[in-house]
Length: 174
Image (tube, one colour):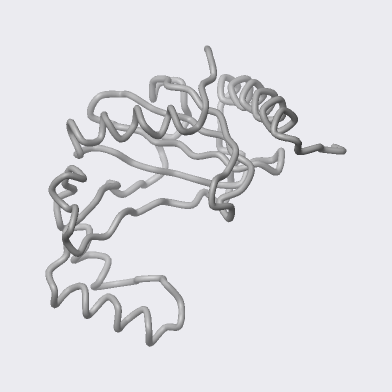
C-alpha cells in the first residue's frame, strides 16, 4: 500500500465527503509510537483513510496516510457518531456559545449534542457563509484495539512519517 502526503489524503477525503456527506465517522488518538492516528471511515461505502501525523497542536502538522477499506481496520465494535458539517440556527448557535462560555471549555454535553447530531451533515458548499459546526471527532483512549494488519500499516506509516520529518529538518533520537 502506497503512502501519500497528508494534504493529498485530506483533499481526496473532502472531495468524497462533498459528493456524499452521509455515513462518515472520524476517530483519532495517540498511538503507541508517540505519533497521532486519524481514521476517517464511511460505513456506507466501506472506504477508509488512515493518517499518521506528528501533532494535532501544530498549525500545519507533518503527516502521511493512505486509502484503504474498513474491512482492514478493527473498529466495528466502537460506537462512533456520524461526522460532518452541520448548519446551526441562530438560536442553537447562541445556546451552544453560552454553554461553552459558562463551562469555560469548548466541550458540549447532553441536549446540545443531541440537537446538533440530529442535524443532517451537509456538503461544505451548503454551509459556507452560514453558522456551522464540524464534527464530532471521537478520541480513542485505548489505541491498542487494533488488528495485526493495522500494526503492519502503522509501522509503514511511522516509517514514512519519520522519513518526511527528516526531509523537513526534524531529528528524532528515538
